[in-house]
Image 1 (cartoon, rainbow, N blue to C red):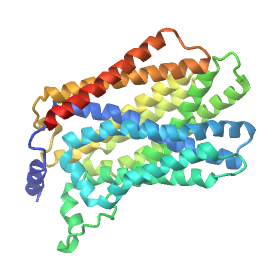
Image 2: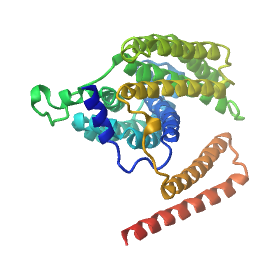
Image 3: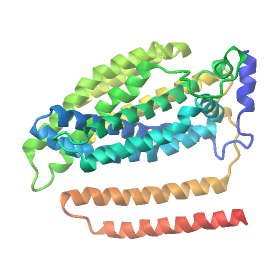
Image 4: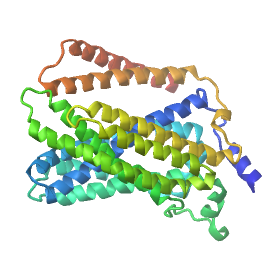
Length: 394
């Protein structure tokens, strides 16, 4: 049976191979996952806080809730955009796993995009029309439910990839093919709690500290309000650290133990929890926002490495190793990817710079020049993209 699984995985790979070295793609997969999971958990945390504060919060918390309601749809959008890259990287070097999981859970993977659209729409509706008096609170609750459902679907897809030995049984129980794709075949509740629920509290806490750090620089800063916001963010992070450790240990000794990684995972999660606990404990709520973000992104990078290690170990049992994935340097694809990255980074850098400066009341002079350059690069990239399409069509 093991030899059959090995041959199955080998035969399901893309015969053309990857367009660049697969190890590099694996590194990019982990790096881009960090941004994706940060924005997804931030969306969930912001929407949840806005709902709670409008229901039970005091005056300053309701004031902050209006900011959180505005943040939620933006974070959902950023989560979608930053999720494209790791998804494409998974499809490139783990294509047998990804397409098998989508086939086995086809109904939910097809529904996923509509669930995300619904979650975004409800979050945006609540931002536009919701109020502390209870107007459209149901929209915020529905948005949270849909975001959680989207996270659950992706969790099941990721976990289904880890067990090739069960794919045939799941597809044809009792030798009868089941093509509905409605069954959730593999899931791990501690992993969900760790990656979605606890992490959403931490992402929100870090962002609240960033909020306090940023707006304290304004001449009209409300220091009492900002101190309250910063203190809340710090408390959320400190409370989340032990919860992160508990759910991480539970994940280690449920799924991790199946692949012989429980000790390594338990030690890694202990270190991450201590890093957050001790790192945040000494931060000033008003001035420590940037360092708080650094601590959390570093922790998410470690979590991304652990997550990737589980996936690589699960298929290494059958001789499937990313480093052995066939590849042929496709310089045209690499060039388009590199140009897209440069243009995207330039446009995003301009937008971030303008947003950062405008909140302080003054935009630095050279930002305008960067804007013209980035827009010009975007126009050139679009022209190149269209020309390539026409050339390939002809």
